[in-house]
Image (tube, rainbow, N blue to C red; front, side):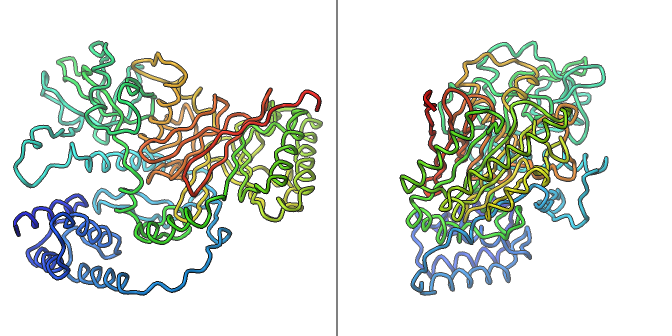
Length: 561
């Protein structure tokens, strides 16, 4: 019995890349005996201890008995502490709008096997070194998730599962080994000769797609490594773009190319798993809370005490369209009339139907006048003005300080009246993040579908519209990045590339796109596109934090209006 418990303890800590000495193993067994933990509950109990241990600042890869003892005493204190009468939770004190330029930069350290905070000041200009670090961080973050996957993490015990393990190789290990089969993880890119290659930290190798002719072989690798929320048959294709990372299985040839047998996206890691390992890291710069605190104190209380709280998300709010302001007036009126006032309204650009970057002075003046008219409209609803937070996210056609990602907020010279008349207004970057209790919502306004389809490499997708939406969501979340493209396709500020990361996965992702609206949940992350707030009917989405779900709403256009 003791041997079985020891194997379980070692297995759980090995998942977190920890090793146990005889003294720490003895302490953990004593803890289990003291609390009379049943065999069925051993793994979950040790999992709790391992998570809390790895959140400590002085946690070592080889488990320290002193730190472990401290963690155990802390967990005992939490269990013995009597809960005082709970006060009503205040949503205002737990709602934060986080700009991309406020997020701290955390580099991945291969030596320490964790994230390290960068203390040097970040700049808009960036440097060649920061560009290298940005791409290397993307590779290392994906790689550490892949190596933690059950198909790559070897067990310490002999078993039949060891025969099905997959071993990652580096491009430098291919040299002189023609005719052998390899599995590589790297970035898809074009060489100087225009050939499609896969690059990793050690080099690159040209890819040959001639043998990749069937959808079955194309999806075989993804099938082995993935467990998704939708049917396997819908995964026959994803978007492989230049700049995205892929797992490629193939045979190395005498010509120095890799004949692809199977290709797949790296497996996506759930938010809970990443939080359990890196819960002590404050990725957003607003203070970190442990997963244990989130689950026990926040998630349940939000569900129980704030069931009717809603966020509204609108995209393509063309203020120069004659029907937009009347539609917004109708939406505000319905909210007040039905006592359904949202806590947050996010308005995403474009706020103009056509670009005015190179327009005439009169076009720029109209642009400001439209924002002024919107400010007057919102101010005419005092209940909404007092209680609702308004967030403005610029689109690709809006006037900001830069056109690269992440984009700065709308210029203050255009939104003076909005600032003066609306007390709870936020002019956010694109992308931006909303932290609400333990939830993280990422808002990104970009025509992602069109951009990804234009830059697909290798095998081209041939699918229906519904499947394309799934492919887009799966590709972006698997890549852990909002824009998995090279800088020559989409320029980004290298010092702030971390603001485009999706690791750990957010609770919800708003992909505001001019493409058709949709909603779906993938690996526990709820993703939706609110659609364009313009046309014969005005569409938008409501998000319920208590349910972590969204609903599509439609304001029908009244011809008489």
